[in-house]
Length: 207
Image (tube, rainbow, N blue to C red; front, side, top):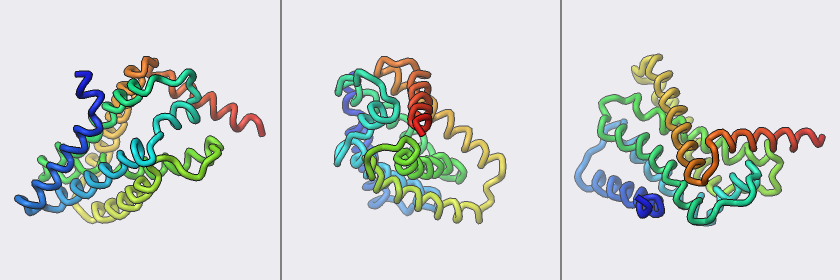
């Protein structure tokens, strides 16, 4: 299990590359599968930009936004990312193979919007002394892609309850991801939200 946690980034990358290659060689994807393949590729790029080139998103999140000290060990930070890859896998792979249910693509589309907003708005909101957050370039591409995808999906017969259910799935999955990440870094699940709120009060209370 420790091996899987430590190499979850690489394992996820290999799975996405297998999916993309297999689809290109053996499959004629339908509309839903095309959406998932696009997001699989975008999130593959995003995770490498966020964590490796240039990397440092988790360090920024914990150190500059949550202001948690001391910082977790590098190995803990790396292993805690498994929550992210569990979330991405839950949003991508079931939707790809259950492609007859078009609305299942919505959670990953919502996540694309969230990524774009999170990577840009955190700078002015927390008054960070930077113009770039690791992962911002691909996050902005995801944001634009998500807006365009929502326009296309709005023309389909997705029911209102399906849009709402997808929102619920998104928040449940996100909560599970945060819980896993916090526990593997030996924090209480509520600790980071409390630290972030305290940072906001401190940042804006100075004015």
